[in-house]
Amino acid sequence: MPAAGAVVEVGQARRSLVTGAASGIGRALVAALAGTGDRVLATDIDSDALERTAADDGWSPQIERLRLDVREAAGWDTAVAEAERLWGGLDVVANVAGMLRPAELHAVTDADIELHLDVNVRGVVLGSRAAARHMRPRGTGHIVNVASLAGMAPIPGISLYSASKYAVRGFSLAIADELRPHGVAVTVLCPDAVRTPMLDLQVDYPEAALTFTAPRFLDADDIADMIVDRILPRRPLLVAVPRSRGLLARFADCFPAAQRPLAGLLRRFGRRRQRTFERDRPTGDRGRRD
Image (cartoon, rainbow, N blue to C red):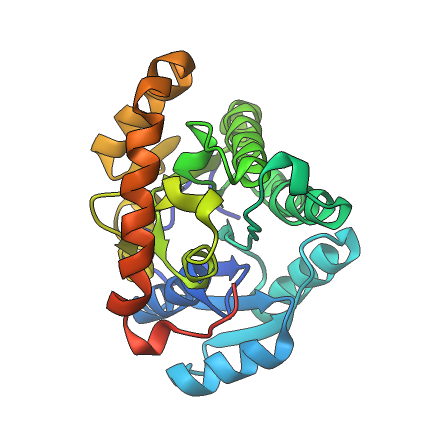
């Protein structure tokens, strides 16, 4: 058993579980981890999409696949047990799976509320708990929870998503202090808008205009590489990407009324970006699931 607080050495194959692996950041992260020689348990609620991604990306045998509904505690127990059966344990659990449906509050449905809280919050809580129960007795491990800059600054038009990501950030910061004495690191990652199916689906929703105010959109590969090259070796508590937008988000969070005079201008700018996004995005990104 590793010593308390032990970190997997560079060059040593990690054993990782990734949720939301059929598309977006999860898909890119699986490829990035496997590219370093790591063993990966790629999970997704859509097993057919997971198999298509495995075929399209030419996943190697070191990438195992498993259907996982992150909202179900029993599914998490099965996933951790499978990792133990395959490799004797897990070094990394990356809670990437998430969902978003733009809507202003008056148009929010009961299903919208349930899905945002169940997938984005309950899924991360259950995944983190399963990881903690597995890693804490071993004195080592790393939980990476993907939130968003929408979890650092309130975003009108996607209020449910913003609320759920605030919850992920707060939850992650709290459990980090619980688990640090036991050698388990927790990192919460808050990226700006990323070119994924989740961004694609917001194009036709004027209420999501503020999502499109970023100077440039990040790529899923950018986030995956940051996790592999920076977050896993350094084990930081919170990472906001890009840093400049993270500082703006912190300001907006501390002084929410201060951003109101700019809201109309930003919304108009975002709407213009939305109109050009469909034309400019790579063809290969169109039509994928979120």
